[in-house]
Image (tube, rainbow, N blue to C red):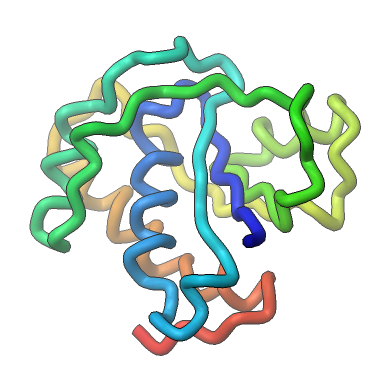
Length: 145
């Protein structure tokens, strides 16, 4: 199985939402080929996901309440990671500096909702949903949702 790794700063807001949205919206007949994971460049391992991230995804019948933050670890086997999907150019630049090749990077340009109200998190989730077809297209899948 190939992995799409969503990357943000703390892995408590954007990237966990993107991971869950990817896994929820991937076409059923392709779910056995790809899965999404997420990590943060400066994440505190084990930190709880933001309450507003959980609340923003509830209307979509997605529950990320059990998610715990994970720091991006490039020391492991990277072979299974098909694509790193970064929330901003800053995240992509950091991965480039660590030796990740540009052809394995994609940037969504999703602003950090950390510290904002639920409305901002909801807009963030909606923006991620809108950009998911681009992610599927980048790995050669067509999303029919």
